[in-house]
Amino acid sequence: DYIEYEEVAPIFREYAEFIWKKRQEHKKQGDANLDYLYKTLGNSLYGKYGERNEQGGWVKLGDWCGDIEGCDIREYIDGEKYIYVGKTPLDSKHTFPVIPAWITTNVRLKLIPEMKKREKWVVYCDTDSIHILSDCPNPIEDSEKLGGWGFEYEAEQVYYRPKFYGNKTKGVPKRAEILRNDNDTIEFKYTSPIKRATAIRRKLPQNMWVEILKQLRKTDDKRVWNDKTGESKPIEINITI
Image (cartoon, rainbow, N blue to C red; front, side, top):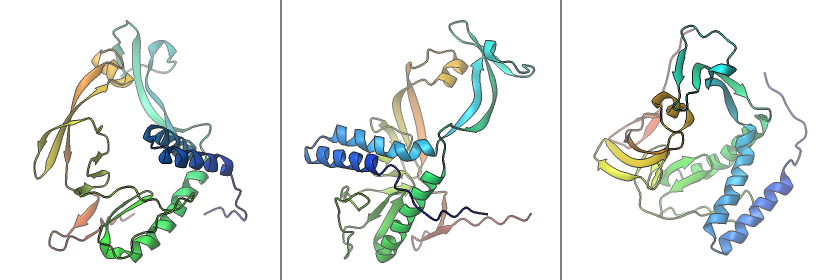
């Protein structure tokens, strides 16, 4: 089943044009901080309408009206008692998945043709970007128009898996120190403030900065790779119902 919309409303056009104009201004001025600020504001317009929250987790025992038998109850360092109740997915009041679904679909419709044109030179792609080799004979044309392609950078970097390449490592801040780097894993060390749930479990002050050790595997487990050819294919899962 699906819903077909006969008309497209130009929602958020003024806001999107305003954000884009500000980004271009600050890029020309060399102000990377304000450029990033406006980029975040633009991205959040997509994210907030696709946001999913959770109901439950750690709640104050005094606010809980349900059954407490068998539940994990802990006393925090300030003497307040908390109870852990199961998490339930919950849409936000502003959740409207049509908007992020439309954006993602249209981005893919732009990505795929450009990737097919440069099939032998494509190294990686993400939600709204394509990484190609520098010797590609037909590089993507740069544009300053809203919705057009924009050149980001050129660098020599290693790609391990999705969201893990060059100096980009999802879940690890750029300030992290590399403790170990071998053929299989990279181990990082960094400091991070304790979140509320962790603070309750460990009886530590919330937002206290602590040392974190994190180990990431380099092996890409999202696809099946051929070591001889360097090619990959999707993982096939056969389910019989």
